[in-house]
Length: 125
Image (cartoon, rainbow, N blue to C red; front, side, top):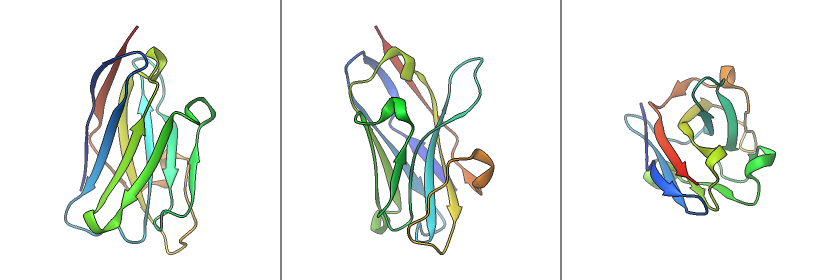
């Protein structure tokens, strides 16, 4: 089970750190992705991290502002979001996929095995 947390309301230019904690299982061998879904829009990929943490990938419009990281000892993956913009406002979801390949990450929602419940991020202008 994945539990996403850390969402909230911030002004444009502010920061939030989202967490995705795994319970009942270890995060070893699970690549993790972050997605977001705004009202009326499809769920879109935001960032991903391989299970070793060696590889990360970001959608272009968050590069340089968002950072994905993980602490496998704490079974938690983080998404640090800086310089937030109103267009970042959405429900953010984390997802996990089992893989034995330490450098692999995944960008498609259908690639993932498990999903968290989502956490709302609101950015006011």
